[in-house]
Length: 158
Image 1: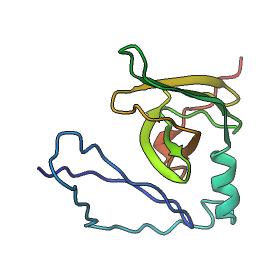
Image 2: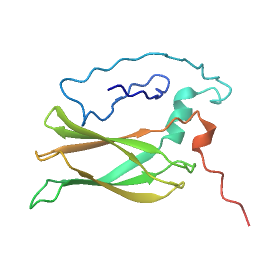
Image 3: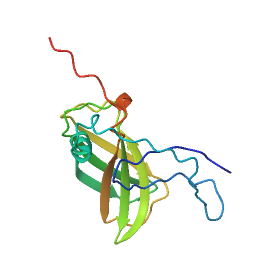
């Protein structure tokens, strides 16, 4: 079974690209096709691409926790995200990496709806296929800050 999708990589960055293989049998294969590049205009980034990206991806993650499955309940992951940027986002994505020692034990994408500038939000999700211990949780912003459609308009001044 084939599943097509699309994603982006910000200038100078690397990222995890993943999908769900829960219904597949055997080893999944992954191929990249139809690659399209878009040059980022320095004027759009006010002459500083790295600073532009950093100022719009200014999130911190606190109170990360992993609760293993027990008593018939699924494993649960939770964290708090803080949007320290000056921008509100419609549906910013975050990639959550679950580590067991130095091995990646799980990966999940989380979306926080209408995440305002300066706001702190709790996020949590169940892991139906995770029974082993996780000793580290890493959360990575996955927001295309060069796409104007990701931003909420600034609040109207009264």
